[in-house]
Length: 239
Ligand SMILES: NC(=O)c1ccc[n+]([C@@H]2O[C@H](COP(=O)([O-])OP(=O)(O)OC[C@H]3O[C@@H](n4cnc5c(N)ncnc54)[C@H](OP(=O)(O)O)[C@@H]3O)[C@@H](O)[C@H]2O)c1
Image (tube, rainbow, N blue to C red):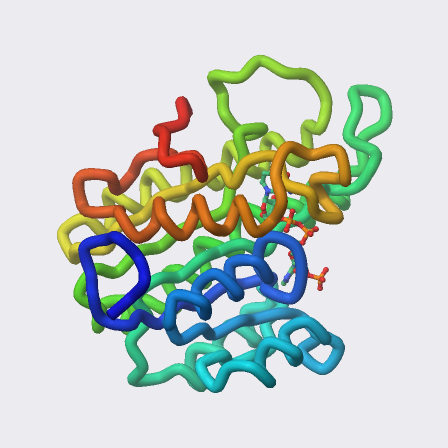
């Protein structure tokens, strides 16, 4: 039995990218605490001290390498996971896009990089893992996006970050429609403003609070909620 309150009672297998720190690491802890099997990916498993510590406490945690923008590494990961069921894929890895993202001071190389990490990589991995997801009873593809990508919010600055998150929202909306017939639930989510390296110490909530909210949200997702943008607190977020 999962410790969640959701629809599925069996232990699930959850794959989380960018799992070595921040929200990704907190998600790993949350899913392990609920008794699930977790495949945590990160760029440098050998340096992922916190994941190693968690592995000492739990046999249900696997740590595998993945630089999410690498097609070759994505292929290697998929081949290692061949024949295995994945119930939940959480595309969490993301970047801010550097500190030159203003009108007269734009880092175009960083913009391309942010699109590679924040927009294209979640799509590539989702499609690459379709066979694994199709083996699940209630497959879910979750992409950690941001309210900063919402067109409904009118805010200035952070153009690189905002545009890459707006683009991944649209990408996931389309993917949800494309995968509807196969029963795969696809949702972008806003994790809150979270105290991580990215969010800063002054942010609203801890990684554990964000991960707990996301865990409850993801646990409750069904087909009727696919293709919609959700917040970690369970509310629907305007696009
Ligand atoms: N913190 C917030 O307030 C907030 C708000 C809204 C949305 N988000 C989103 O939440 C997600 C997690 O953010 P966070 O706050 O936990 O950020 P974080 O502390 O900066 O952690 C980012 C994670 O992404 C990984 N990553 C970055 N580029 C990668 C790549 N190319 N391949 C593989 N992994 C990569 C990092 O790995 P390395 O350690 O190897 O760099 C790290 O594990 C991001 O998508 C972010 O945009 C955060």
